[in-house]
Image (cartoon, rainbow, N blue to C red; front, top):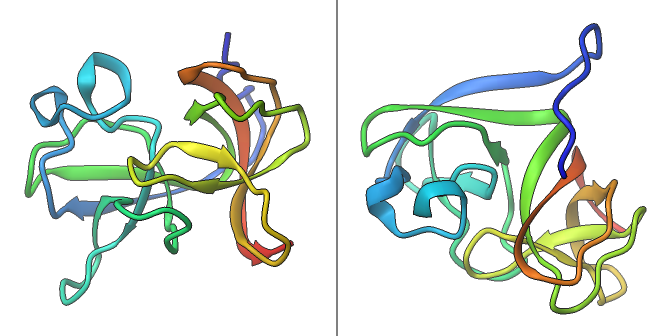
Length: 141
């Protein structure tokens, strides 16, 4: 089971505008078929807006914490411990660096030099598992 943020532990969150429907009506991989706890990316051509990460390895702003409708408030964890929907069908181990798949799920980085946005804090071997991860500044590892 994914851990919640501990009291007194620093996190960084920002509220963006949802450029797409990321609520339960969106049929995403997260809780209630939403995009909650998945990676989101900046929306091209729209300032301070995010949308679901839609291509593997795309540049990520952070992890969505809410289930906003299009135009709603999208709270994004930019730094710190978060719940994250992952695809563990390629097994993920504690400490693995994560990138995104085409649905915004965290997947194990298997390519040297690939851009990563988070580190797994729990293992997974199943699709759409929710694990604890730490969101880090995007970097190539």
